[in-house]
Image 1 (tube, rainbow, N blue to C red):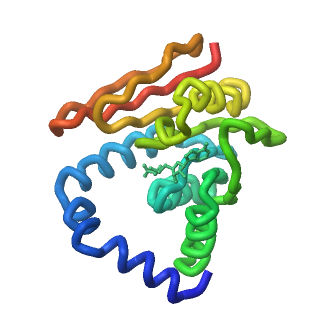
Image 2: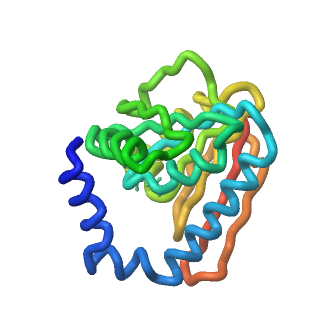
Length: 187
Ligand SMILES: C[S@@+](CC[C@H](N)C(=O)[O-])C[C@H]1O[C@@H](n2cnc3c(N)ncnc32)[C@H](O)[C@@H]1O
């Protein structure tokens, strides 16, 4: 990816139609809540092998990488090659100290060699797969023994019924749209 393409990406994020939301207090609050939960989920543990499903613009991947710096590693998967190329190039050019290993694949069919201690699916990712039940079961199947699947939804999002055990279920109603964290483990 060229620097010109990266510049176009930064400018698109600062364009009025995106900036109005990105700079809003609501957006800042959602980020605050998400990052606070991220810090709690990572905790003080070392050697964590973490997977984020759904890169989008890659901000959450940046956050997770820094939360894990010196303590664990992040793999980020997205089906969209553009999101994958951008995350890789951007983290390299920005000098991220704990960049993600990027996998361009469909999470519904991806079969890694090892399971993950923590898998995150944030925002619309689970819905964007087109099959919420399959995405949920893929997320659970990617867990190592005693691993956690963390789902974060903004607004109403129906999580399909599952045999998994819910470790934590927390809804923040500070904003008009609820922000919900669910942490699941394999039953
Ligand atoms: C809204 S973005 C995620 C943004 C980010 N997690 C956040 O909320 O800050 C959703 C991403 O999920 C990806 N996605 C959709 N279906 C997928 C699949 N089957 N496997 C992997 N990624 C998928 C899309 O390409 C998109 O980049």
